[in-house]
Structure formats: C-alpha cells, structure tokens
Length: 146
Length: 385
Image (cartoon, rainbow over all chains, first blue to last red; front, side):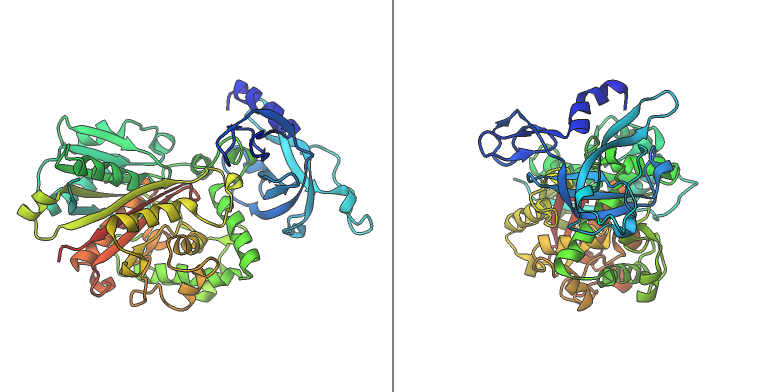
C-alpha cells in the first residue's frame, strides 16, 4: 500500500478512533460515517478505551505476502467493551495460552514493513490485560516493539 | 420474464495444469459446452474469474476469451464477486436471457492459481476480505474461517472431528468424478492427523488451490423447447450480500447473505428446502458447509454438523451435498467453482452423473459463496420432465 493510503487510516489505527451514531447510539469501529445499524450519518468521533475480550482466535501458520517473517502469529476477533468486534493480532502472549473470553487491551505495535524502501506500518494489536495477569505465573510482557 | 434453460455444459480436469494456461483452460471448457449444446455461436460471453490480474497479470478476460474461443465481436464481460464470481457470471447470463435482450449466451468460469508464489496467492485471496481492517492485520482467508470455526465449537460445544463427515463425504464422492482434483478416499483417522493450516482448520478441512474452467450454454426456454431434449431450466437465480468484514456482522456465525439468497430463491422457484433433491454448497471449509446448511434451512443453528454425522448428506441421504466432490475434493478453482457446481447439478438432472447419480433428481440447488459469506449466490435448477 503506498504511503498516503496509510495517512488516511493512521489516526484510527494508532488511537483506536471510531465514531458514534447520534441516532441510535451505536459505537462504530472502524469509522464508516454511515451507521450500519440505522443507516443514519455517524460522523461524531469516538475514542475507544482499548479494553475488550477475545471473541475468537486462530494462529496463522501460512501467512500472506508481507507477513511471512512474522508467522506463526495469533489473530483474534476482540469484543471491545463499548460493543463492536475488531480484527487484530494478539501480542505478548503464547498462542497456547489464548482463550475465548480472555481480557485483552490495545497496544501499538509494528504491523509490517513494506519492503526495503517502504514505510514501517504501526497499528493496534491486543495483549493480555496487565491488571488481570497473575504476576506469579506470567513473565513480564516483552518491552520491545514487534 | 422469459424462462431460461441450460443446454450445454463443459468442464476441464481440476488440479495443477502446468501445461495449460488460463486461456487454454477456458477455451477447452467453452468448446466442450458449445459442442454439448450442439451450437456453434453465442450472442454474449460472461466470464467468472476472481484473481487473474493478481495470479497471471491478465485482465480484460471478456475480450481475451471471446477472441481465443473465436466467438466473434460479441458482448463479452468479466464478472467479479470474490469466490462467488462463477455464479455471478451465471446470474448475468440469466439476466441477459430472462430480460429478452439476448437468446443464446455462454458463461465460463476460469481460474489459474498454481503458477503463483504461495505467499502472493494467499495475499491475493485475502483481498476478498476488508483490506484495511482484516487483511492489514495479517489475517489470511483461511484464518478468517478458523475464527468462525473456533467460535462455532465454543458456542455449540462441539469438537473439531465433528466436522469430519463433510470432508470424508466429499472425498468419497470425488472418486466418481473424472474431473475432480483428488481421487483419494479419506478416513476419520486421516482427518484427525491432518496438518494444521490455521488452528483449528487443517488441510483436510479446507479446499486447496487449483486450476480449472467450466462453461455453460444458456438460452431462452422457447429456443430450448424447440431444439434441445436435454435442457435443464433455471428456476431461481439470486444474489445477496452481507457486511464484508466478519467483525462488522451482527452475528458472525449466521450467514445472512446465504440465508437471504436461498430464501429468495425458494420464493422465486415456488418451493421450499424439502423439495431440493441435491445441494451443491460452498464447502471451501467444513465450517462453511455446516453454516450453509443452517442458513439455507436444512438444519437449525448449531446442528449443521449433525446432518453429516447422521449420513443425511450422502448420495442416498435426505440432502446429498458435494455430490461430485465439492470444493474440498472436486477442487476449488475460485472463479470457476460456481460454474462447476451448476454443471454438476445438470449432470444429475439429466441422469448423467454415473456412479454418483442421485436417484430421481428433479430439483437441484447450488450456492456459491464469496469470501467468508459477504456474497452468496443461489441457483435452483429443474429437470424438464
């Protein structure tokens, strides 16, 4: 994807910024300007807190082009506490420990590099919520960005 | 509205066809269909294809294939709706004839997948999803199905091997189909041992890549009744859509587009699910087979897998599916798949399905799904007598 294409969605990807529908009150992510529930305009900015739980998950072993070097990596549908589902990678967690219902929180991480001359794309991933982790049985999440 | 008949079918062998290019495969299928219909021309060509630009750097398939099939300067267009492109092309052909604009058209579905690097091919397949909010996260199309399968297993308290009958049935039926990609029966043990692609989906849950082409000749019912004794009639042709991304759907485990498309098709044909003698569904994964049976009214929610366990999906069962191998074992050359499905229904409705013949088949249904359910296209066909 050429660089300008990332400018368009950068705020939404790094800040988890969506919209709220004034008509029916639905919180929308991604922002889509027209409410999919009531078809009314929904352009009021709404920032999600970034907390949610795992609705479903998988592990990508055979990655699409551009993501091969990261495989295997866990992906999930996360149900945000404000309502909507969001598709994202999980990070700072062993795939074998992921469970449906696991509390997770949004972090900003590197998503991919677009070749040698391309940009490094950052965006949201989700990690186990730190305040729910049992400090005795879990090591500290990795501090590096990856 | 004119009634529309299908008077010719053509299929190529599915698999890795390294010696045949996209145009060779398509022309083989078109010529076979024209010969089967005993006609030597057509007024239009509708091509179902998903990713020729990405896989083989070839676009403009309408003109290319009209040219290479020597069909003259006819109307020729490519139709795209992800993996439902084949049925989308049939739908366009049906509209052209049903509207009375044209009376004799060819539909061809074609895909050439195996010349492509596997990672590029997976990236191209992912373009059926939401590029900015699903594929950008590194999600593959198979992993997207896996998200649904995991949630299905969780909500309905079933295990992975409960899905095995769909794959076992498909592989068994492919043994009787000379065009099928796989001629190898599989066992429950094979299913349990299969390597993981995207947990919990394994190699034996999902259809692999393949090359192939299939074609149909459509004409007005009036023309068919005058000139063709083996015509099969299209009783319904319905396209429906759902929100593109899984995360945007009200209920990801319910295939809304499949439900709407099937139930509008039942209305159009004036029948219900109990009248369907066989159902070519879109088993790109065993999970999609279960969800399709539920959406189309053959099983309550969460009970689609039971039809497999009870043997209802066998050739002798109450609702035979994947009768010539399905996507799983006949093969899934994307944009060609929807045309293969309808060609196979016609084999049954003509009584030409050989060892796989569903007895007394009069009404068949095919449903082609784009991506993980954002497009669903249902056709209902009826034998002439």
